[in-house]
Length: 245
Image (cartoon, rainbow, N blue to C red; front, side, top):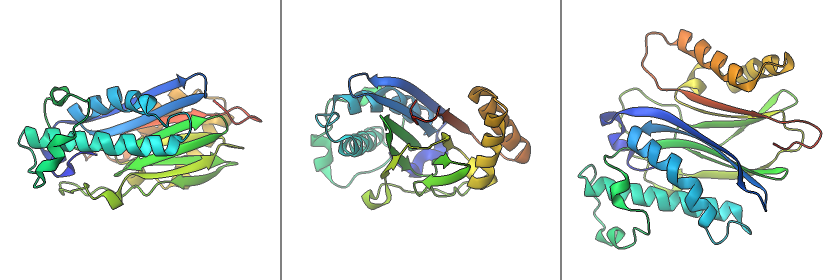
């Protein structure tokens, strides 16, 4: 989200947020991993779930609510980037509909990739943007969700085209072992099946998920010792037979 043409010129990092009880009545859980400019990452971590929860269709059409929220946040970030001189916007009409999010929330500009998982009961809605990865493992077989693209070092990319993001789909959580969301270059280093095997092996040994993620990041770090990257992964396992958090 935001202008990815300026990501290479800003300080970057990875951020995550977990809210098992975003809405108790529905019930809905929210998980997300963001990777990109520091200011944009903090902004998304603070605002996306709040704006989503306030959406008028949150209770009745969660997929539409998520899509609207992501486009709105993206629009706001682009407007802010233009205000700070990071990107020129030819259409002046975009400045007239910035909504309630104050421009001052983002002190500097830059885009971001994201992987978001909403779980409501036994169903999930997954959104991936940019190079972020999300997949669900069922019986040791990964089902990759989204169309995350491999990154190219030092190549400026403009991801403002609406038909390229966000990629949103619905997936049943029935018989799910775990959901993994990752940012950075994890998907470049390990095939999804290898990632699944790595996690499944440790789950079977009853290793807690914090340790599993740390082991995975350490493994990837050793594989790319000569490169600079900012990686984050988040893993949620499920108890059977209900397939819920």
